Every structure is written in C-alpha cells, then in structure tokens.
Image (cartoon, rainbow, N blue to C red; front, side, top):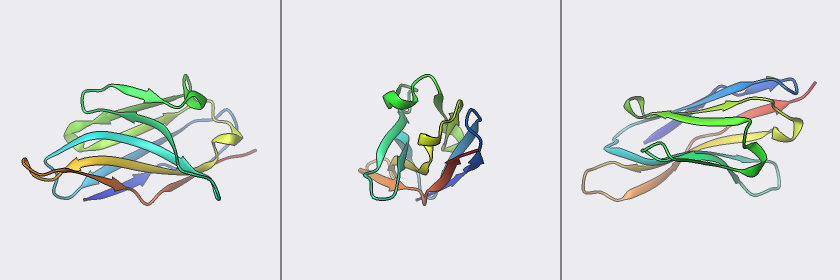
Length: 120
C-alpha cells in the first residue's frame, strides 16, 4: 500500500492550501485516515483524523481553520487549510489504517510528507 500526498507549497499568512493523499495498492478497507505534521527536532503531532464513517477530531491549534474530509470510493483524504499562520509551517504526513484482505489485520501506513511553508 502506498500513500501519495500532494498540495503542499508556499503560501502567505492568511492564505489557504488543500492537501490530498491517495492510497493505492491492495486495499480491502481503510479505517482511520489522518494528517500529522512534524517540525525539525520535534515529535510528529496529530493535525486531524477522520474515520470511515466521517467522524473527525482536530488538534486544538487548527480547530475552526482546517477541515478534513475523505472520499472512500477514491481512498483519498483531504485537508483544507484556511487562515494559515507561520506556525503552521511543517512537513505534513498522511496516515492510514488499512486492511488489505477481508480477514486481515489493520496495518499503519505513512506518506512521504509534503512541505507546507507559511511566510510573507
């Protein structure tokens, strides 16, 4: 299973970006999908996650500014980021809990990361 992220880049404070992450490979079902971020020298932290049923939770720092969504038919998760701040600058990683077979166990997969830079 591979997770491929896209949509990162450079944006001015107050601007918006939309990240996408598509899962491919042998996939029977995907449970939770999420976005994490990590700055150099710091631990990776949860930004937002969403279950297959659409339940979401967010880090306090992004509530009201970021929205996570997913398209189960396309095995894709999105992160709409609005009102971006310089402190949102990080590498953003996609994560998915994937079951590859109907009787298989869940496995945790990560994308390669995409850089988001908020700067004037």
